[in-house]
Length: 196
Image 1 (cartoon, rainbow, N blue to C red):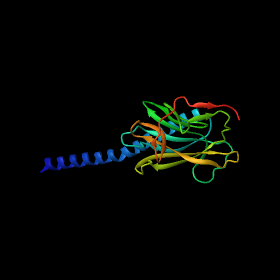
Image 2: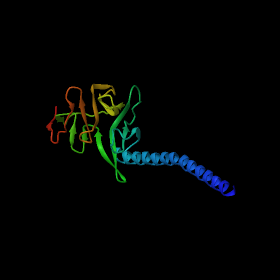
Image 3: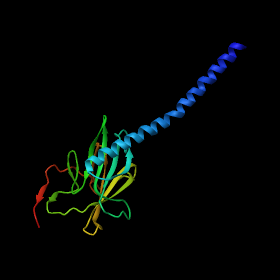
Image 4: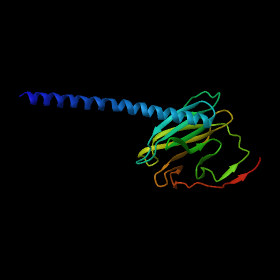
């Protein structure tokens, strides 16, 4: 009878220690996720050169890398309405121990392959900022992410239509999405328009 009791106690203690270990795992995961968010914000702050705000963080498609969406806040802007008023919006991707730019939106929107959302660049355009809204769905309505961007006019009001940028599962890149055309390819060397 004694050996069974000892074995029973050992099994009980092993079960308790396993449950206890499992109980610590989420806390470790949460701490790891918090550290990754901090690293992303530090990197984004260095790139944007000012105050930043985390808009979203995660794996935005099946088997996709870890990405974070960060707004470089527009200095002096009073945040109002939907979204965030930003001087720059970055989507950073975790690669190894570093965060790399997957999408960079300011006066122009680019990814590492080229320009997005425009066929020509108006060099005389006086950039005032962006309104960024993050939708936690892909353009097809599935789980994912869509970043909506609108340019601001000199009064800080929305100017023109919002453009959608999302992770294209076929390319693994953030690209402009159009309801009629789907994902639009990057333009490597758009024509420049000079002066007014």
